[in-house]
Length: 287
Image (cartoon, helix red, strand yellow):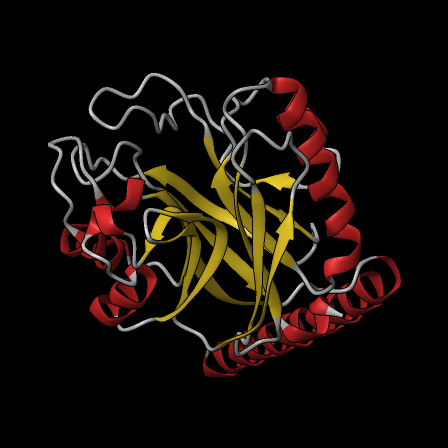
């Protein structure tokens, strides 16, 4: 009886040891197969930190109530936790807005780096666009976009952003609202600039075009629209009924869109700001 019980115990132990050997052998073989498969077919994609990007036409700080108030623009930016902000319709020491350097003031209020890009002389000062960034900025440049002499000069304003992973190019733009033909010329120019800017590129702006329009279709031949969605209505701010503000990027393997949204701010400007969160691939993927 005792001997029989002992044999049963030995048999159970042996069975358990054999099962464990089989399990670890299977696990080893699976691990080797996984490494071989991944290495041969598709390298693992290592992802880095995310970057939050906003585009905001601030209407020189004038809200739907007629008041010029940069503090509430800054409050919107701070609440969004944006890392990069493309600003359109910005005054620089213009009489109508109290001769304030608006990009400089917004940079001070938000604790960000700021640069201004001039479009035209206006009202005793300058009018144009701006960039805010939590990361240092360098190599700012104004790129003239095509248009008629009697129309307001339109630009793309770019800067290099010294992101911890690697330098990227950030661009703000504001296209002509009067002529779709001219907007087509302007987006074709943006597509040409995409070829020479270098680095991964993010562009935000007021494109004065709806998502299904020819200008946006032409842009999306070169760029990935990070703000595509039927509910992302940006204009007018109090009762938005269309999307004319977008954020796009070039370098499809560099970013992954985590989310996109319109911030429901109905008063601070005549546009609502649009925001995306992009996950940045690791430095090795930026080459």
